[in-house]
Amino acid sequence: MAIAWTAIASASAASAQIGEDSDFCRNGHGPAIQVNVQGLKDRSGELWLELYPANESDYLRSDTDLVAEGKVFRRTRSRLPNAGNVAICVRVPQPGTYAVLLRHNRVGRDKFSFWSDGAGIPANRALVRSKPTIEQARVVAGAGITTVNVQMQYLHGFGFSPRS
Image (cartoon, helix red, strand yellow):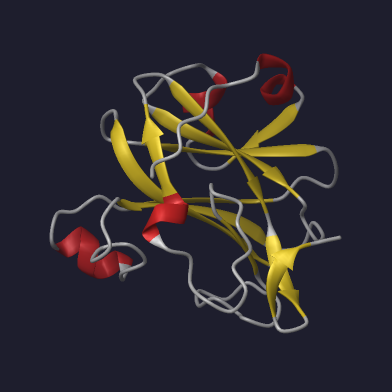
């Protein structure tokens, strides 16, 4: 099931707009997906928002392979502001269904660090110790700015969960 959200003006206006595509969302130039980030563990490192095709076989595949095959892939990233609400934006090629993954790259590696990095998905279901499913990551992007709220999850005990 794909998730479609609409922007709430007061929430987006109070957020620091970050990411290489931030001008698209800030200026209302779609199609783009804005993710309002909730539950950051800290402000270290970078926040990465990745856009994938909305199918099981391509979701979370290597960006190099997807680009070489001419498939949808986009990563926008940015250092985090010291304080305040955060929204990160990624432009999409056209309105439609996509899969997104939000990553808090706390240690600055190109590879996900299970022990320190955080992850978030639009469905906001607990990840436990498994990769997010395509159903949890789908977003239906309209012609304008599609806004989703994503709760970050970090390793806690036996799996990933939102900070309490």
